[in-house]
Amino acid sequence: MPIGHVSFVNTCSITAPPAFCFGYISDFEHDPEWWPSLASSQRICGHGMGAIYEQFASVGALQFSSLIEITAYTPHESMEFTITSHGVMICLVRYEFSEQDGLTTFTMRSQIRFLPLWLRLVAPLFQTILVGQVVTHFAILKQTLEQAYQQTLGV
Image (tube, rainbow, N blue to C red):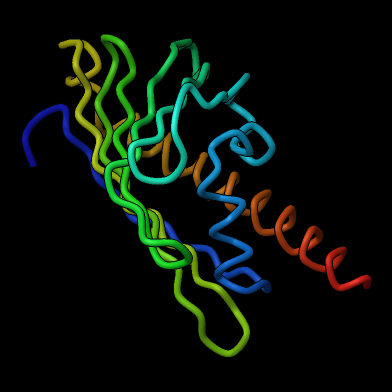
């Protein structure tokens, strides 16, 4: 992998149907509820394919804004999007949803290209930090979705 590029795959099993999980996760306005480093997320335009969101986040000491554009969208199954963080990084992400034995497996595949030279040089360190954050955030996501789904069932 070229210097300054990192990639990783994370999965999370959620006790809720794929359509329920997809509906929540594919709306990036929910992201601050399960991704604590995000201060805000708002839809700029569109829904589904072509939708654009703006987010404000911090990773470690870095604070930045990002634009997200959905580039592929198959309801209840998958979506792809790009995250452009002005002068910091460009990220290509794919979300996949599958169901087995009453569980939805949510998979996130990420490829990040850091832009500033100093970030490219320490990219492996950032990969470790980002993977750790994703594991933590997926635990929050799992709890959030399972509680919300139970509420829809009246449990």
